[in-house]
Image 1 (tube, one colour):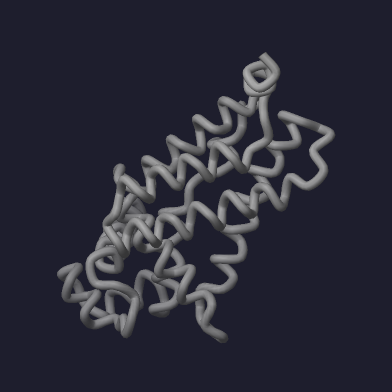
Image 2 (tube, helix red, strand yellow):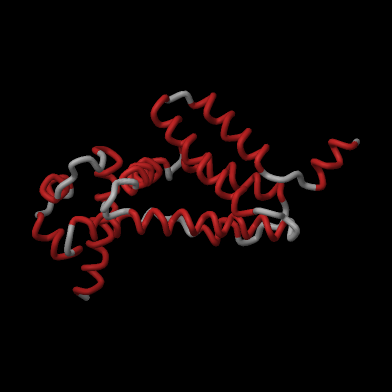
Amino acid sequence: MARTQDLVRRSELLAGVVDYIADRGLAGLSLRPVADYLDTSSRMLIHYFGTKEAMLVAALETQRPVVSAMFADIDDVDLLRERLWEAWEANSEGSSSRSTRVVLQVLAEAGIQGGPFLEYAQSATADIVRELAGSLRAIDPSHTDPESVATILVSGVRGLLVDRLVTGDHDRVDRSARMLIERTLPSGPDDEARETG
């Protein structure tokens, strides 16, 4: 029974760590203020996670979407556009927006040499680019460079999320996200029919 309680408490602590980062940021983060925020002790955090870095990476893993599920059933470019727009809405203002703030901070920190988040950021980026490129191949097996298209979409969306967060100009950035998705993806049969009709 104690083991189940430990896992529940660990999950609660990780959710609290995500909230802390979303509210207060990663800069200068140390165990004591996180422990105070979570109404626990630094010693207890070390008991559960070992190190501050391990705690942060574990918290990030709880925020990582299952990208294979996001793109699993897509065989049509219009459905892919729709799925990407749904992801944009969720990450920009839906229930995932707090996680987005955390992930964007981590990606910025990953650029610091010797930082603890590089491996996480590389793996998360590789996962979503691979899955999105796989959807593009499923839609059009003759696609010449689906990885580059996927990279433009992933990096473009991340940049726009930063813009939206920093400027608060939701209308402009939402229009830009829609344009990025619409214009970067290849034309589907319906698009081609409209263009020639």
